[in-house]
Length: 103
Image 1 (cartoon, one colour):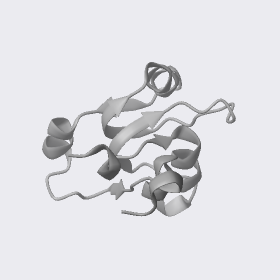
Image 2 (cartoon, helix red, strand yellow):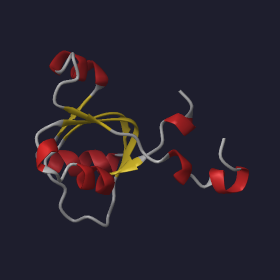
Image 3 (cartoon, helix red, strand yellow):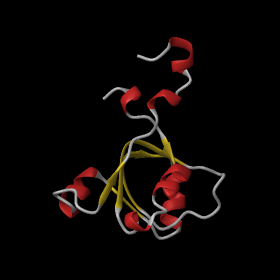
Image 4 (tube, one colour):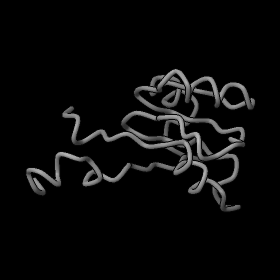
């Protein structure tokens, strides 16, 4: 999968999306990289399924009691994607789109 189709998403955006009461306790699924964000001080306990994590993001999620799972583990836990929230990051936020334009 090309890098353009799996953009990075920050912990701040994940926390913002998971604040609603309907999404509490659900598994957050994203295809891309989860990066740490120093702008937020308290990361809630989340269950995140992702392709790749930065070391800082992994440490912050595990430190607060959250879980990090792979897509194989997700298939066993939720085979029909029940109790999951699927989200993707903004593809046009990359710096290259300002130079080369939208693909």
